[in-house]
Amino acid sequence: MDASNKLQRVELLNYTKASGEELVGLAVELIEDVNGGVQVQVLMDSNVVSGVNVVAMQQGGCCE
Image 1 (cartoon, helix red, strand yellow):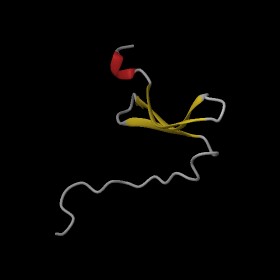
Image 2 (cartoon, rainbow, N blue to C red):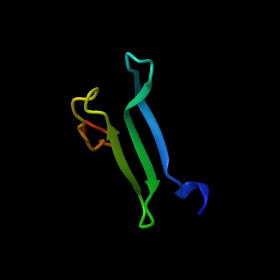
Image 3 (cartoon, rainbow, N blue to C red):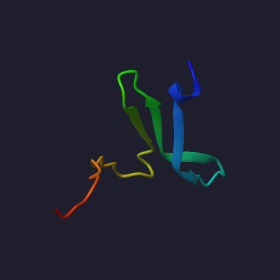
Image 4 (cartoon, helix red, strand yellow):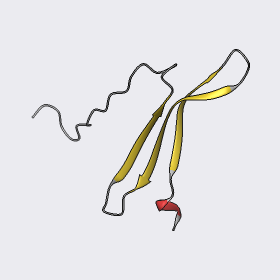
């Protein structure tokens, strides 16, 4: 398996508990799909993040 097929994890939001322990509040994991594209998994701590929406991006001109 080459580097492009390895799971990549990106931590977007971390927080620190009163005890000083640092935790991940929001992260995404990305891996290249063998059929093309990228698979994405969103990891969230419900004590920090109230919800996640997935919205398709519009590419190209917006006002044709």
